Image (cartoon, rainbow, N blue to C red; front, side, top):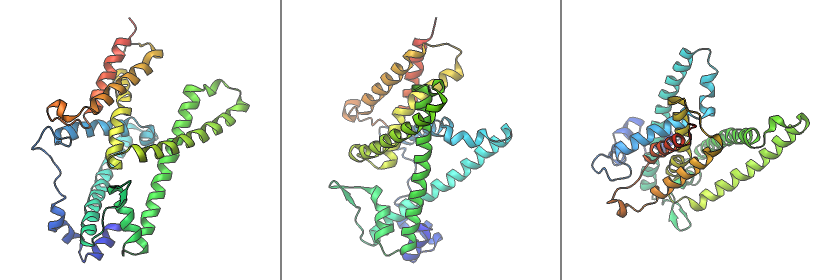
Amino acid sequence: LCIYFINTQLDWTFAEFLASEELKSYSKTFITDDFLARNHFIKSFVGGMFITICMTGLDQDMMQKNLTCRNIGDAQKNMVTFSIVLVIVTFLFVLLGALLFIYAAKQNIAIPLMDGAPKTDLLFPEIALNSDLGIWVGITFLLGLIAAAYSSADSALTSLTTSFCVDFLGIEQKPKASQKKIRKRTHIWMSVVLVLVVILFKYVLDSNVIDGLLTVATYTYGPLLGLFAFGIFTKYQIKDRYVWIVAVVCVGIIYVLGNIPPESLGGYQVGYELLPFNGLLTFIGLLILREK
């Protein structure tokens, strides 16, 4: 809907937009000329592949619908269909992003500033709410934002509350009468933590939200990837009480590696390839912890 309204404002059809010279300046997809660059195709492909495995395949919220299918065949069809839809939706969002910058350039709309620095994440709300596109674009933007936020926050809070209650508080061993009260209190505290994390992101994030999210994923999903691979490919028993130490140490190592200046690495810029390396470190750490 936003793509349609913006194209209409620019007196373009969708086909004219796709064929426009303005779009061509945003259409470079594969960076292959400099392997040292952070967004080189091979590094992005490998890192993106593992991010997809972790954020989708190892995420219960994402996989729950596959688990509810009647059989493996239906689950496989669902995954293929979901993948196709996801590619189409992602492509539309990429087009929308390019169109927003084209529209901003043509209408002399500056990228909004936050703390004195340009913040490209704010360009869409700036155009949707403060431009001449009409009220429907603003309404669509707000509805989409609210729907996405509520969906993500609800599933995240439910998962965090359940995990903390079961794994840390041992709620199953608590009296039935107190379990509901414990869940409610935990849910409230997790909500507070989530708000604090959002506020923290505002002050810590020095790039766009998507890049920041994927960068954080290279830290947080690495131990999960290593644990999953260890459980799938080996039959070793490990000393469970030390697993958290391995996870924390690996995240710390990856954080240090991710913040090494490119000048110290001969110009090499570390990217999303840290995720599989993080998983590998965790896997090795678990091998060290295996019971003899």
